[in-house]
Length: 197
Ligand SMILES: C[S@@+](CC[C@H](N)C(=O)[O-])C[C@H]1O[C@@H](n2cnc3c(N)ncnc32)[C@H](O)[C@@H]1O
Image 1: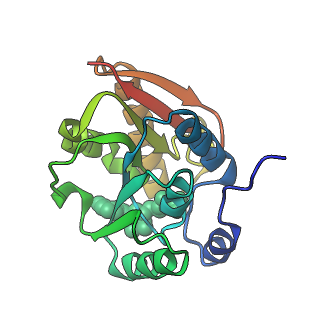
Image 2: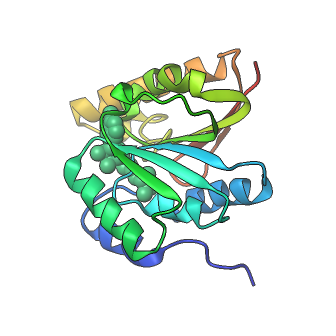
């Protein structure tokens, strides 16, 4: 039987608090990718929330280190406590800062982008020099509850504007010669974009 690699308790509590964590099926896909690519050791995550996805990724192998960036102080503090309670402090560093202000000389094998959806291309450009050829960039929520493909599902102006931006991002990413990109209709829509130059 497949080992349960998710941390259900924290995810469950947080979903009840309406904090949008990655859906389990998308996380399983991401963990499968990390598990089958043993060369992945350095991970950057943009959007920590309470540390659930960081902890799931760090749990794949002891050799993995996750740097995770969170703009919200309350979230960053919850994440630090959860990471301590799960004995993962050696493997995860939480940075409380706006990702677009975060500068590091580190080069990452995988960059998981799960923060402000309207900023996705800005995050890519900001962190491109922190990647190498072969680095996998992963993006969540690219369907945004189906509204990206069917705007009639929402009557909320800001949601419609946001989903238009996500659609533009998907188009830019698929035509971006720096990446070989695969979009998948799993969870809330996920893309794996491998840096190829
Ligand atoms: C979807 S949640 C992250 C969920 C988390 N990756 C998980 O699945 O466990 C998005 C998080 O990104 C954070 N965020 C939004 N804009 C940000 C920014 N510019 N820099 C860093 N974090 C940001 C939000 O505060 C929120 O906690």
